[in-house]
Length: 68
Ligand code: SF4
Image (cartoon, rainbow, N blue to C red; front, side, top):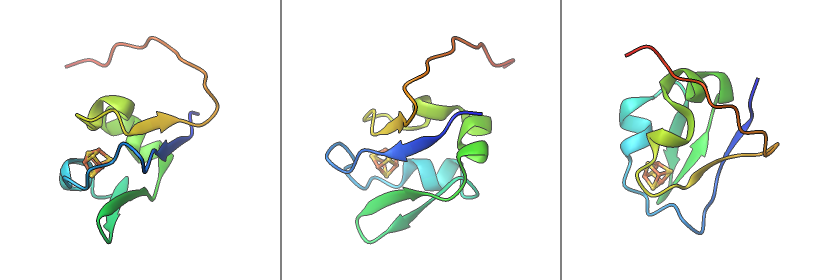
């Protein structure tokens, strides 16, 4: 499983990730934080964040197409 983190430099606090994936991340002040990497992955991983603030910790990049 992938581990995700919020790059606080890039996070603008738009709330998109928490709105789309409330079980995966939540807002903490004006930045998002990851609650569950598993849920983030289910919700689309890095693609959840339009500002590319959601990043993988382990750096492993798997190209997986989700069924849409
Ligand atoms: S979608 Fe990205 S920029 Fe917006 S709150 Fe979440 S991590 Fe921050």
